[in-house]
Image (tube, rainbow, N blue to C red; front, side, top):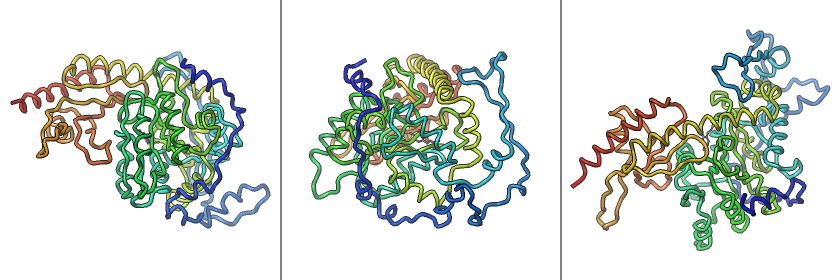
Length: 465
Ligand SMILES: Cc1ncc(COP(=O)(O)O)c(C=O)c1O
């Protein structure tokens, strides 16, 4: 373990910390977010939970009008295999009060019991104390929470710092907000902190400083890169120096399978490194661990930021599905944090095996035709295809174009991967593609990569002088 990491681990959760004041966020929120008022109904809705209150507030439907009697769930124990005949599937039934909750409206931050469960889990997993100005808010998937967070920070023309490449699901949100991008190069250790320091150190004072840095620290989608501890520490120090907030989008936190110890999250580190908390807004998701269909993610971070995002949700989706929340709560009550972690470890091992299968197929078919690095988390390889480059009128070499190649050649040959241009916000042409290894069998993976190699060879051959 590197000595800096050992030193950080040695600092327990009892460290004294400063909590950033709410004004810090007020100055960074967008005009729309500051103008948003709590929805008049939903604002009072939480009062319904006060003991003894007789509420005639909301337009809640009467549960007797619903045709459901119970919902039966069959659950495998954490860490078990799906086809193992010796595994005892546990039956859980949702009925009576639980069923009524599952079929009813609830408060925007999530069903209180689930919200509290998540709050405790975040304390345990991320080693944070309960009285440090943060809480949890459950939402309908982290994609929705990201969308609302970008809206809560960015006015048209604002600067946003992103990894180059970044999550292809975030680029359309940022494009629609008409903001300006500062793409920061990444390497095998994540965002190159020295690049970030250079950009911010030479910032044109006539332009507003960027308010946020958006990063995917574990198994980044699409690059597959996991940020090293050292880089995380450097980035955090820069966030304090230049006053930006880190949006830590971490759906692959639990899907880490690298040989080195898992680096702590930014949310953990801000306390240990800066001794001051409130610079990190975390996005987590159950999609890759329990089910993508539940559409459940959660935000963790400063009260003011969560309130701004909840104000948005209260007037749009209102809340994440009560049914999904109750099913998850039922499971988590059975499993506890320990069971959840055991299950997640099993999921990580599953993807590690698939990563190794993909690695063998890449070696077999694409050696010399593409370049790649091995991911230590999540489910993506980022391949730089050796597509023929071109030279523009100013004699600048332009990378081959994977978008045209995939859309006009590869699809016809029965293989589909994501063109890399979708992961950049500056409209650049790129020869990179994102390849997911989550779903295909070993045989299918081999065939898919063989097809990609074949059509790539033809492309290279057809363009060679
Ligand atoms: C980096 C990243 N962020 C967010 C999401 C959205 O996840 P969710 O299903 O929780 O909306 C994904 C999904 O693939 C992702 O890869």
